[in-house]
Image 1 (cartoon, rainbow, N blue to C red):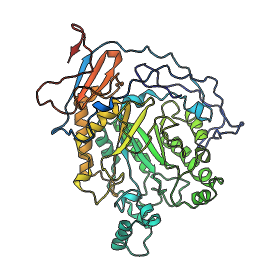
Image 2: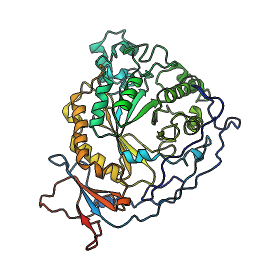
Image 3: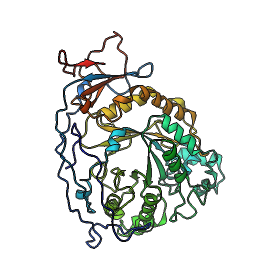
Image 4: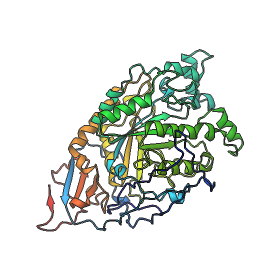
Length: 486
């Protein structure tokens, strides 16, 4: 059973004791089923007594996109109401985690992640060079041979041109990590997640295990991950996170393992796991956003063994958060916070912390030269996504795709700054809030609620100005002489 998310104030971080003995860049992982390397958990956390709030009332929820306001959605209305419904959770004790899902899933998610509410996703890599169709360009061109991708290459590149030839063209010539950091700070986001390696296998750091296909040996000839990490930590209050694809479309070792129905494990042992240890030790990300299992189960990736090390021994063991993409069948079932699917927005409260990862460009995560203005979500649509997501207990991870030379296009920068402007006015109703007993109003559509139980506050966020000049709310139960509306 997963811990519930409701009113109770659960401490979010456990201090884990440092491990004595072997350390270094590649510590011994806890392999699932290997008793000699398995970590023992002296204290096992019981299931959280927190209770989930009721789901949104589906019949009262407006259809998506049919109530777009004509100007920036403006107000979060705070109401002083009754005390929280549930008592605080009992104090937790530090624990160590076994390399099993039962043990790992019992880990309390560090509190900062739920408090943050809003982050920026950054899809950047060699796919930003063709910048056509999708970040899955290589797969669609070479594997699926989709006509528009084949014709694009035929019309623009010589017949002998290979995907690897895009590598030197990925120059990042105008990449300025400080400028990126300043834009992200202005957006009101509280964390970022950079694609350190996508399914194409190109690493944005000088990985020892990606010889001649990384940002030090090819293209930028710079450590992109390090530059952005330093800028984020020196210039902002954002948390630094990294996305990492477990598999690679055309890596020969992965293809050989796949042909054996994953009975062979050459690829994770020689590539994936060493790179994950390298990333965590070198850059200390506080979010590790795994993706791309290639159809292989978590046992093939030894995901539970790696996560046991991450939670017990790593330099970010106290603060790191992870998602749910650690092997076929694990999504929306195991891990830290749930993503469930790309652009996941259930519209109702879930009993487990979740994240809505979505894109400003409706059709692609990477930059597209062929995108039109109607392909980008408006700021009104983005604010609606944020409000709905937070009201139902989720975080919003909003994606941008920089260009091959390292610039953030004007349309992405504008959306980020617009979001920041909205949050400067209404952020009190977003950051560090909790879900309320109702997520949306039953009388007036496009009104969503958040709360701060300790302060006895409930916020009503309305996305459309009432034409009558009056706002009618059906959910708050007011007390004469006690309830205040600010």
